[in-house]
Image (cartoon, rainbow over all chains, first blue to last red; front, side, top):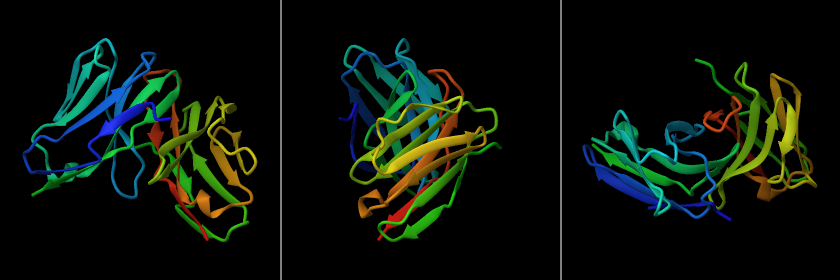
Length: 110
Length: 114
């Protein structure tokens, strides 16, 4: 049973565009909401994360928006670059346990 | 730059054979996780160790899978006997204790069971 639903499955944007990935969850007991980035042949790597008492967090070109009442959070990639082409996973954390969304493959065309 | 090291990177073997995957966590990390990634199921947690003690292996098929940490620098995941449905990429991750602590992933072992 997936703890978090992620959409879309894939996304293609032009360089400079803003891909947006959305995630929704049901359980309100989660402590932490990270996003991981995965390149082919590599393990996932933490990109950015947000706590549930914060509505927005920015790190460089990456922004998480968090809507606690709607139980949704999203990742925006500002001024996207071809090097951002990767698979992105949202996740929810309860104690030690990371539960991942299904992943979104983002392609940024030059 | 400290990294989680996994060996082997690739393994192809026949059904019924024993498979052992190894992981060297980042020095000083006291939590270790094993995940499996497939197209159908995505990333699933198989096992979790804290200070070398297994705390959660509920995601693991108990009859054929086993996970251990013989010492703080080595974690192993064994499959015996292996089956074609075990074909997947297996990731090890390590971290420090604490909800807000990130998990650092290795580059995985790509396992193919023929």
